[in-house]
Length: 335
Image (tube, rainbow, N blue to C red; front, side, top):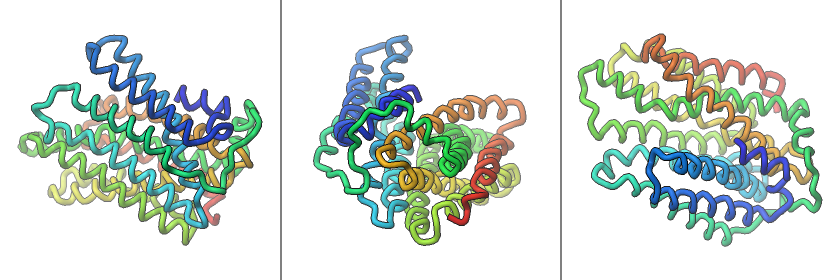
């Protein structure tokens, strides 16, 4: 969040070549991951490097969305959906560490992350910037903060916040949710737990791509609203599915895994399309900062309310996000 606010304040994604900004962010994140292998995992220095890596990624994800949207010709939803689908698969991959890398040293995932980030920093140089969003020529501090309060942009961002309230809380704790259910059913939590968690998160890539294709044809906010509604209904139905046969819970979590990310790219594409000239990258970066700032709260609260009300009801409060998101989008659903 700090990195995103800093980037947006300086208007970095719009003042400079987006590929250079992307490469710098990915390079810093790679360096931080590589240096982490030299430290004690519990040290303050390690925490500092992880914070640096997170801040650097603010120069990667929203800038990548701007690059994708710069080539849009009526298909921004699909193009940004491709990027979000890749993010979804990347978020799911660490859950394969247990079944695939059970005997590996803890440094392995760090080296893997560093190598992947360095590769991204190098490969982005092979891309080209599309004609839709040329680089800005002036430094306009505060311009993006002013634009973000415009009525339509504000409504889209509020919808995005509703989406983010549930997304990372779902992703972060779904493995524990499944583990508790299996334990109560007398099923051992072996290496297959990681495979199930991976599958439920990774299937969201289908939602990101499918929603992008559909949104380019029927409207972004219609698709985003539909995904919010399905996700909210899944959260509300989860306590009932918990006591049903295992395949019912599995099916509900798979549907939730698709819906929970399906709207993400459409909120970003809508901001890119509506942004004032020269501010698309900064507005996308601010949107990301707001969303990830909110996830810090929901991710931390989920185990608290699960301990208070039981894991059977742990997903229930996630429905708050879709409800608020749908309310925020009510004036834009015809767009």
